[in-house]
Length: 349
Image (cartoon, rainbow, N blue to C red; front, side):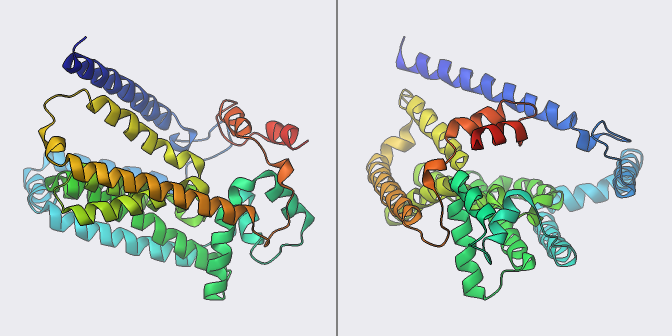
């Protein structure tokens, strides 16, 4: 098979696989009990806020559909003045998030609670046992410990605010990614990011799921600048170094964060079979040098963080009890893919 034919076949396979899994994600999101109106099997009930919000959306949609003047107003605001409107909405959502965090910032249990408890208590046998089993959370715990020392504060409000900052920073990086690839789509991504941020309750949970977001967004941004931009070589090499360091850091916060990088690597291999990729031929030398710096910075950062974790003395743990990766794979394959108490107790034993 010719190179061009191999590229086209691989591209189609990736396209169909990606759309298949996106469809499954959409289906199960819609079928989620969280979107069920009325009582759910899990014992949840629809709140009056949800009902009012849905009625508001339905009313606005019907008004736009039947009223031409209102439709023209919305078209002018959200389409013709899209960039200005999207920036205003994005800023307003951030302000609403800040107010929401200031008014709530509850204490959280589970893993996030174990990390927060370790900021003020390192002698607890229960916490020592937890970190002996869940050494994957040591890096995040140490990060929060350093921040608590720096601010002389270990309150939930402080870490919820830091968590909020990291989530919003990820959204900004995502917008910059789109700006690098296609500036005309900036308003679209800001609309999408605003909807996500407005409906994202995890800003109240300072845990790896949220703390890793800006790291992933930043190494994706560095990739886009190195491989898909016309910036000068020095900037691209610098971003490659930053991207490699951030990639390693994201792995120590949440190992699954490197999955996008694995996907990028596989797709870039496929693009080697594309003959008419003139842009990459033109910048081949810069891309090669940037890739080398990326690999070196990834390795150096990984080695440094690995040594830092292994030599930490803040929390006394027994590393021989560390849960293997197969444990988390097993939990993900059981039930709804969430926390599995039976698996966890069996592995701990």
